[in-house]
Picture 1 (cartoon, rainbow, N blue to C red):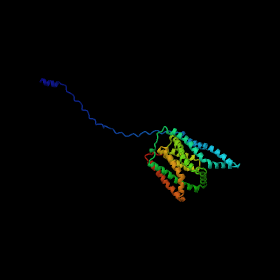
Picture 2: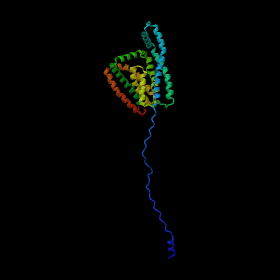
Picture 3: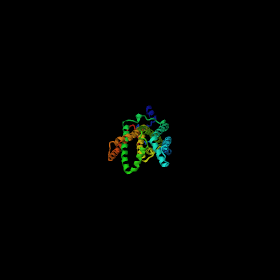
Picture 4: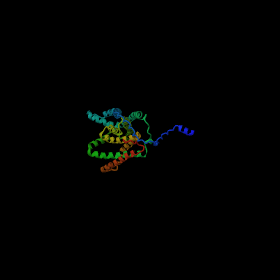
Length: 325
């Protein structure tokens, strides 16, 4: 055996390494199922804020009463100088007649001025100063202006139709309401009618109801539907008579809906002023048409479609809040 062969036999045999198994390639991105977003915890209802929403209405009525006192004193002196009766009921009737005929309009003006100061400061300090501002351009557009017109015109014709039905069913109640409105003294002076009934009064009521009351209700964490409902009922109660209170509540529901959707008093103030303007002078123009009662009822029925269309228009407005009321 040769030396080379011996060396080859002497070398240890190298063991072969096991072949590693090729693992299948893993995908670069693994698709995982989307996990549903965790729901925000429900906010606890603050019952105290709901009760606080009643306070602004009580304050407003207190201001109205207090500002009438000096004029009632003057009216009582005036009535005493021209009345010789000792019957307390006749004396009271004479006092109210003198007050409503001579002084009531000026008492309403004083009430409006004092109320605007009180509620203007209250609303600004409590609900505007620390909150994001909503500009005019964020509120008013073609659809929102059309919505205001739809609400006002629709409600006017609906209320007129309701009055026709109410006179059929409750004639005594409706006649008493008409006499009350005539005795208020507001319609006797056109200047007072414009200043208080059309301009100052609506602004004051919006600051109180859709401003301070609505603000407290929003802080109570209740659903928007109940905010609108409660603020509307408070608006009706504030008027302190059954007939006006009912239709004022209906108006309050729509004004509350506008307030919620557009997040601003600007649009409700415009709508309220327009509504009072239509109620004061629009009805006079309509009465000249001498529409039969049946025609008024038909217009009232058509107004329901106008109001439904208006709500749909608001919900489709890009400027309006998207959350449902």
